[in-house]
Amino acid sequence: ILIITHATAITFLLKKWCDINYHGEYKYKDKIIFDGNFLPCSTFKITFNDKNKIQNIDSIKSEIKVMSFNLRHIIKEELIGLWKKRYEKIVDFIKSQDSDIIGVQELTRKGKRYLKRNLKEYKIVGKKRHSIIFTNEYNCILVKKDFKIKGHKTYSLSDKINRLGRKAKTDNFPRICTLIHLEKENKKYLVANTHIDNSSLRPHFFR
Image (cartoon, rainbow, N blue to C red; front, side, top):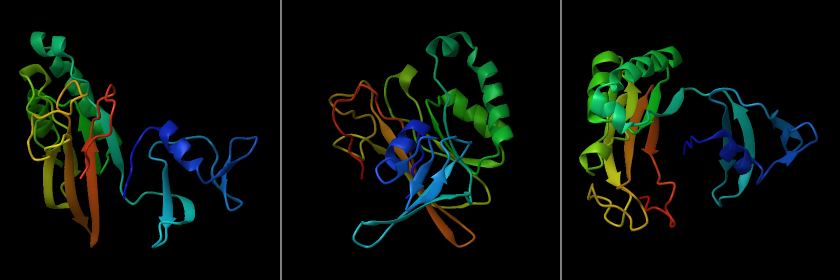
């Protein structure tokens, strides 16, 4: 299971099992696993046994590079045509990072077409959430073409997970999750990309 999130969330997770000294170093079983300074794509491996008891924590170098990128859908830009200039910079940034897998949020229909034309090295999967026209966004996953896609699907984060366009009662808009099964060099990966409503008052329905 691969979890990608903000640095603050990761440190709070590590605090469940690690001791933190005066210098801000995180220790597990007297071994320093983190010095308190995050670098891009800092990765930690937490190992559990069959009874869900933690066995080990390590700081590791990732075999693949994964990125999450909120592209920010600005309706005013969409209406007056300024979105393309921002997407030119988005493409330049994505190429500079050279990530293997990218989960994007707030991707528009025009933006998706632009990424397909200008990021030929990636496959792009994911469906729109079927809300009103100006908020009809995608949570697509971009995958380098040397990965084999075994399957993918976009789910609704509501009580009807197969009905896109449906929203949970406390959400402002329909929320979705794009799920993809990948394989490369006999290794299998399962990646989920979502964008949860910040005002929701109850847990979403993950399946």
